[in-house]
Length: 175
Image (cartoon, rainbow, N blue to C red; front, side, top):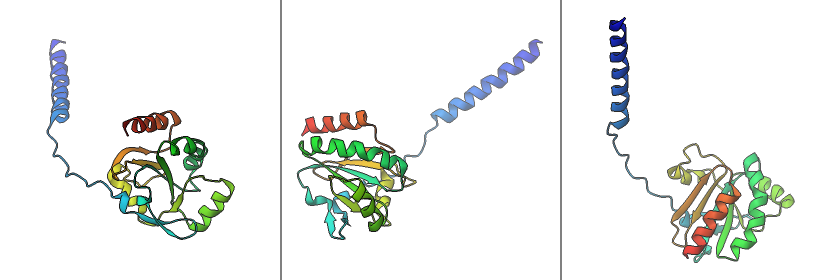
């Protein structure tokens, strides 16, 4: 009996030491990834006119990547529409970047009046979000840029109103 307990203790101890060894092993540090340059992004609007994200030079920009076919994207749009006037008055520009055809987005926007600019993403537009943790290039995704085009907040997935409001209030107070 004592021999079985001793063997069991040795096995458990060995497993714990191995687990701790894996937990505390030194991992190579991945090379730094350059943040995306959203400021250089130029995309067509719903009329096909190229628009630059730099056209709001002294404003924070809340960029919401979405698509009309995306259920969580459609679920968060009424909140963004409702919050836009309040935060626009506080120097924060909302911008939608729709990942679909201009025709599809235009049809959707006709029935869901968006008060803020909406641009049409190109095939490679979402690749900008990979270095921000969006490896699968999923939607929705929201990025907050400061007036120097620096990323100050990222949300992958559907926005939570309390979280978004808290973040907007924080950056608004910092300005």
